[in-house]
Image (cartoon, rainbow, N blue to C red):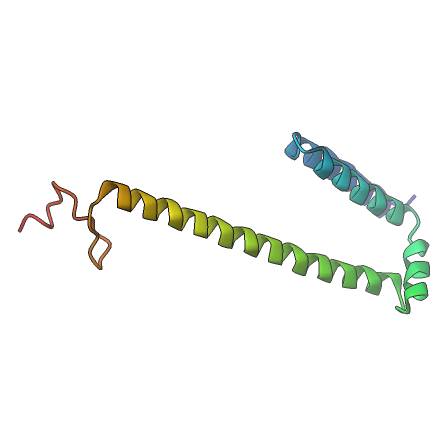
Length: 123
């Protein structure tokens, strides 16, 4: 085993522990994380397997296959985070809107509340 393999495997084990601790209440997330990091450890120990899989799929090198998979995974993660951010923005808008309607204070174009006691409205 080379030193880089030892470093990467240690990183994978650390990532499993951190992800298990982070997803402590979600068994499915834990299992997915353990499966991914186990596969990464396997591929680090046996790097020729990626080349064999890549050749089977018509890709020249195992490294290229991993880059393609990483690119797709990155795009997928970006889209998931974008959709989650949009959902949170919509929820926040609904809460702010409901609070504004419930309090009944008008808001001018500058975003300053017309609530009683506002010094800008007392002129």
